[in-house]
Amino acid sequence: MEDKVVMITGASRGIGEAVALEFAKRKAKIVLVARTPEDLERVRGRVLDAGAEDVLTITTDISKEEEVEVMLDVTLSRFGRVDILVNNAGVGYFKPVVDTTLSEWQTMFDVNVTGLFLCTRGVLPKMLEQGSGHIINISSDVGRRTIAGGAGYCATKFAVQAFADALRKEVQRQGIKVTNILPGMTDTYFANSEQGAEHKRDWLKAEDIARAVLYAASQPPGVLVDDITLHPMVQEY
Ligand code: NJP
Image 1 (cartoon, rainbow, N blue to C red):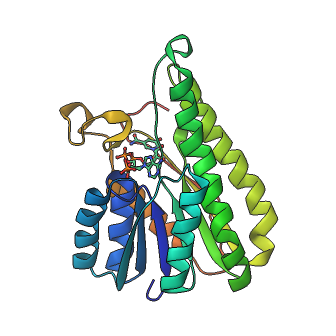
Image 2 (cartoon, helix red, strand yellow):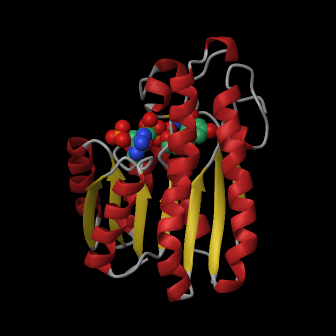
């Protein structure tokens, strides 16, 4: 990963932080993206300690087109390229449809789908110019199946899967890979929950997802990993 420029959204905690640390250990140049500057600064310190060659933090709400444009301008003026985009930022509200507000519905689509589209569309011209690049989406196991109480969230992740599958067909002949990682229940702060809570003891750890991202990202140029699904042994699937 030396000299590779890896941009990670939702990098201020949870899975995004773990992904950043995995790439840092392999001496990549890392761009950390999220909305909370203090959290990004904390992760920046950890990522530098872990061995990253260089780190850039950019405070960005990925659902806002103008902020994503600035994020890309700043990245390209610093590094001149993007080799890997990890579309990880995501939000979820889990409740029956009848109780789901329009604002919750829209926030899930704005971040999980539109934000992912904006970041992907933003890096593609540079990747096409490079003739190489890798878009890795942190989707969800509920991007291929559904759960009661998660209709809106499932719909966003099904959208991610469809978007990625179609995009892969568009760009794979131009040297660009598209991979979806589909985690099951993972111990993070997701959906305003507590990381390390007792009931999550046997769930996947953020590092488990990060290793899957690394696996996909470290294949030879001719090998394309479409999807990786992971879930904890305790989760019925
Ligand atoms: O969640 P969490 P995870 N613009 O809440 C950022 C998927 N997944 O690590 O902006 C930019 O700890 C937020 O930072 P901040 C899930 O759908 C999870 O578990 O400062 N960034 C934080 O860094 C998601 O796609 C589970 O608030 C924004 C990060 O996103 C991915 O895993 C299961 C943002 C969220 O960290 C990572 O989630 C599954 C915005 N508008 C899929 N909004 C699971 N944990 O069980 C949020 O199947 N962020």
